[in-house]
Every structure is written in C-alpha cells, then in structure tokens.
Image 1: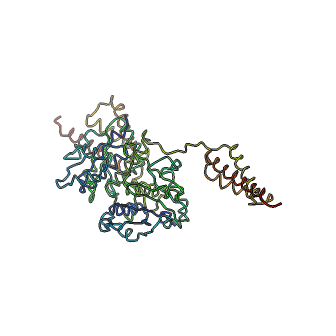
Image 2 (image 1 turned 90 degrees about the horizontal axis):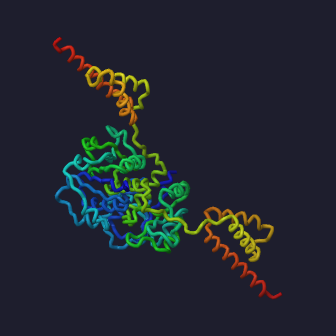
Image 3 (image 1 turned 60 degrees about the horizontal axis):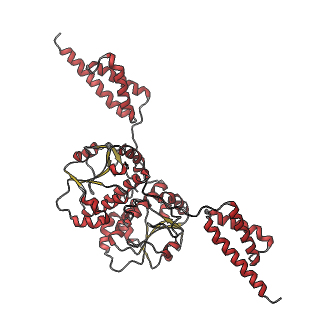
Length: 249
Length: 249
C-alpha cells in the first residue's frame, strides 16, 4: 500500500475557514487525503473553505471530525506534532526532512498522524505530550510563525518527496546525450564555418575552438542540440560559399 | 554576503491580492526579502494583501513594480521560472532541491530571480524563454496545480535549507547522551528493583533485563533520562523494602 494513504493530517481547533480549505488543496497536491479536524468552532464559513480548496473539495467533504486529539489519533502509531517554539519538552524536535522516513516507515503498515495546532497558540503542552515526535519547521528567526497551510505544505512535501511517489516523474530530456563522435562532428563543422565566414583566420582557429568547446560542453549537449548547432554551422558555411561565388573575380 | 539577500521573487501578473500578501509572509519566513511584481492590475485590494502578509507588511511595502519581466530580471544572472507543465521546452526542468545549490552559488555574488506566473495560466512561452532555468515542483498527478504562495513556499524553503541559514538552529537535546557506565548503573538499579518489588524471580531476571535494555536503548538515552529512570527504580526498591519491614514476621 502507498504509505501516503496512511497519513492523517490533524488540525486542532483551526480558527480560519480559509486555512482549512488551503490545507485540503495542499494535501491533495502532495497525494495525502485523510483530514481530521478537532473540535471545529460553529462559526466556520464552509463556502470559504470550499473556495480555497479549489479542486480538493472532495477531500474537504470527506473530513472527519473529533472532539479530542486522543480520539483522532487512537489508531495511529506515530503521532508527530508541530511546534514553532523550542525549549521545555521540545528539545528533541526534528526537522520534517529528518522525520519523513521515520513516519513513512511506520505508515507502510499503520496509520500515522501529523498534528497541527491553532493558528495563534499552536498545540498545548497536554497535546504535545500525546505526540510521539515533535516537528520543528526551519524558518528565519526574524519571522518564525508560518501560516497553517504553509506549515502543512512543507511537511506533506517532504513526505511526498521521501515516498518517491510513483505518480510523480521529474521531467527529463527525451533526447539522449551526444556522444564524443557526434560532438567532434559538430566541432569540425563549426571550425569549417568560422574559417569560411571569415570569423577568424586559421592561426587563431585552435584558440577559438577551445573557447567554443568550453561553451558547448558547459551544459550537457543532447543529440537534438547537436543537430541544431550542426545545421547552423552548415548553413553559414553554405552562405559564405554562395557569397564567394557571387563576388566579382 | 548572505546569498538569500540576493534572491528576487518575481510574480508575473498575479491576480489575487491575498496571494501577494501570503507570498510576502512566506518569503520573510524563509529569510528572503526582495519582491518584484510585473504589471499588477489596478483592482488589487492592498488591504487584503496586507492582512495576509501578517508581520511581513514591511516586505509588501518595499515591493518593486515593473512593466515587463525583462526589466525585473535585467540585473539577474540566474532566472529560474516555475512551470507545472512538462513537454515543449520544459524537458530540462529541474526540481527545487536540485536547483537550490545552483541558484545560491550564483546568488553569492549576483542577483538571481525566481519567477512565478499567473495563478490560472502560469508563464507564457515567451516568458519561459527569458528564464535560464525551469523549476518543476513535484506534485501528485491527481492534482498538480499548487496555489501561488505554496509554490513560492516550496522554492524558498529549499533555498533556506540549502543556504544552511546562520539564523536557524535545529533544536537539540541540551543533556548529553548517557555513557555505558551510566547506562549500566541504571540497569543494575532496575534489576534490583524488579527483584525487590517481586516483579520477577531471579531465574527470569536476565530475560526481563534483555527486554528492558532493548526498550531503553531503542531511542538515545540522555543523562537526564537516566537520572529519572534511576530515581524511579530506587524509589520502588525503597517502597518494597519498607513494605517488607512492616509485614508481620
């Protein structure tokens, strides 16, 4: 089973309806779908939450509601609570990137929870005591306090990356890298062109080609790249040759 | 100089005023302060932007406005544009984590830009052509499209972590780890207590202690931890001894 399906995001008494919606979108972006809300107040604007969830409204509709944190994490093995503060009980906090493999390891077989506190006051000491692990999200000490949905984003993003989710494939060049043989054919055509167009004289050619090799080799050259560069050189050589033929002798 | 101070976040024609504010907060959370907005429309609600920027309103006030992307990146070396799509010109896109060291390397000496497109349509092909690099943020193919401020969050977070920002120090246990000598003193006290309290008989003691060693050694034990555990064992031993003395002979 995909361990991300075993991750429950728990929001403890979130105050902002918009944040709840944003959290839904972030979760779905990162392949996580199980949302639990602890003790939501009765003034929530669920239309606002739906608007900010965008295409993740199914996840909003499927949310579970609990009266207490204990109930929400009853079936969970790892319970990782987030805290912006350090000190007192929080010295053993870990960064999301450190905890991600630990959480996923457990989530391969058991439900695991990530717990996020109130926007203003976070989690209480009693709630942190229920957590098996504490997460501290790296941030600038100039302004440490992250918006709720951005805190969820960082944690879910680290889990998604660590899970190496089968459903994400980083883009990759379709064209294969050029081999030495192809590269040398390219450089030969450019040498020829530089002489033919009169860009440089033969005594400066070697020096110029060293510069050109450095430019073209700095990034990886694909076969498609070399086709384009080869075509440019050949065309300029052809133009130079045409010109030569048309000049009065 | 701190390379993060050389990073410019460029928003191309953002539609939502709230998103602009959220982006300010996210930037300040991650120690990045230079915001440029390309061609903002004239219906922006700057009060809404200010509300969502929270304590990053100074950053909102200091934003620069440009008519075109060319102007905003004129002084930048690396210009990394984000794109959710792949294919056509985007095959060489890289993940934020891959690009972060490349961007910071350049930002140590030059201004570098991260460019984010419109909420609905992203960056045009013409705008992507101006970029030296393309960033693709990993996301679930079920729902790929990230909210603007969350896309900025992921990119800034990776830069902040890679920069190893001097102003963030991960929490660490203040108490040092317990040495073998201290651990063995602890286990001896627990063996004694388990016998004294009658929890087990001496023929089962070794077996029990193996289990207990496994439990206590699973996580790292600090000196403070051993003091607590030692105290518990000694107290129980004392209670067991008191009881023995009070029993009728």
